[in-house]
Length: 498
Image 1: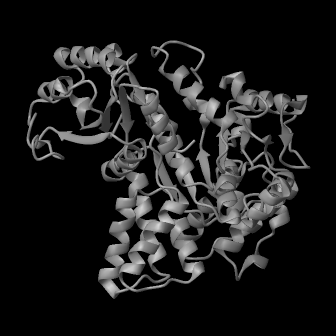
Image 2 (image 1 turned 180 degrees about the horizontal axis):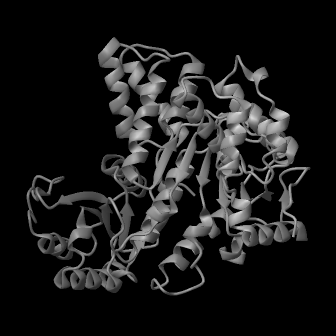
């Protein structure tokens, strides 16, 4: 159901008090005006604190700097006169006892009158005493069709007819932005060189990064890593490569549903985060990184509001990859009540979305301590698959050394005994191998020469791998994975000796 369909239904059902959280005032007011026009005999009145009512010459300025007077104006209108009353930023006054009481009185009266009060606010802030009478209506970010219409309108204004490929790229790049931001960045391009060019896609992406950064919840993460940069994990790679075209229109015609996501469980430093980046690059999808800690705020209800905002933004940017690193740290206390139930409510909203989402948002979550995750997270239907990423085998360590040395010394790769290095570093993770090479480079650089195989072995001898310092934790994860709880990411698993 679209916003206009839902909003029109609520108007016909005589819902007296509606609350629309959005930053797009102009766009939502346009949509409300269209709904009012279809119903007939519904005049739209708009009020804000600075200018009062503005739409009717007889009422201009009424209720200026007086929110209670703005509500009294609605109360004084004859019962048979229909109207939709848009109150901008009215959430700031809801804590006032007189405002709250007046709204509750109006909620009773307007059930029998063709009138509706609509509060338009940038965020959800509803006191407990008004929660029962206010109905929240979601106003989504513009769809691809709305964005396409707006871009075509702007280009027609300057007499430019874009190629279909350029138009598609502009629309895809702009998904997740408000129409106002899209107009602003395209107007900047038009002012700069008089027309829209292929290079302007990067301007839109820069605006998108800025928009996402301002939410302070998601980060637009550049994904340059490739599948070939991952050493080992052959089963996981095969699984990902098979789903490379799963977001295409051809897959929809075939009847395939959108892939849901992937949970990567395993030992720290084994390439779980690298895999998330490589998926985005290989599938040519934007990568959004969620720091779950940012969802939690001090004010009551704000954490849940941020969770809904995160979901709305991710779905507006779809198809995309949503990367949630170390999800176990965020929801470890979801079963407890130490924070007043905030973690439990945020967790409930999140896993419900995971199970029911229809949008092409592919969630890649990583976890190190699987025993701290609530069992609901591991239930089938949340993710397409759960993979265990263990310590690399000797063959995989050789591949990891090759990946790093090919990047660091592409012309001198033959000077390094990679097989010996892999043999001499048992139970090293990929991150520890990388740190070994960095330490070897320091050794060579301090002596004004290139680093050698012996330098790498010397550096390795000074590193105590996590497999020794956290042996019990790793053995628990290995036992959990081999008991059939997850698929093994590698055919050749390197298990610690008990």
